[in-house]
Length: 207
Image (cartoon, rainbow, N blue to C red):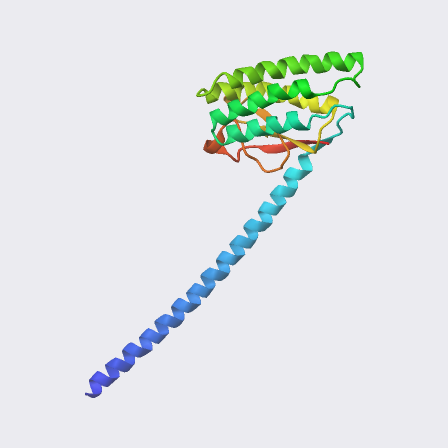
């Protein structure tokens, strides 16, 4: 009987000791995890600061052109392609084409009218390719790449309705890279969509 009592006491002591060790180990693990998370958070913050430090700020020229509707269809296009939605991209491209005739060019100089006409012609050509190629999202993305360069020039030369960010993806087009324009710093890559949605970095702000 005494042997049984001593055995039970020994087991109880071991169990208490084991629980205490597990609790201390858990506490130590939680402390370590909190430290690691804090370190990661600090590193991320430093990374964001470093990225922001690289952003170039460009002042767009001021003109009488109201490009609000036109640019909204462009952002619609980038969002559609970032979501791998070729049919929605068609709708956005048609919106771009429909917006150009609504822009009042009466306040433009002769030089501005020529420059605007050249950019309108090029953007419209790319928009037509995108609108005519539902089901061929790779082809649509190729024309977004070319169109974005024209939109970049358009907004810098004729004014932007809001701050616009130039976002660069280094991997697109066999690592030659390509950029798109966004009214947000949040990266939603239209060239790779869901495959690599967050691939890219803000390079420039136009305002």
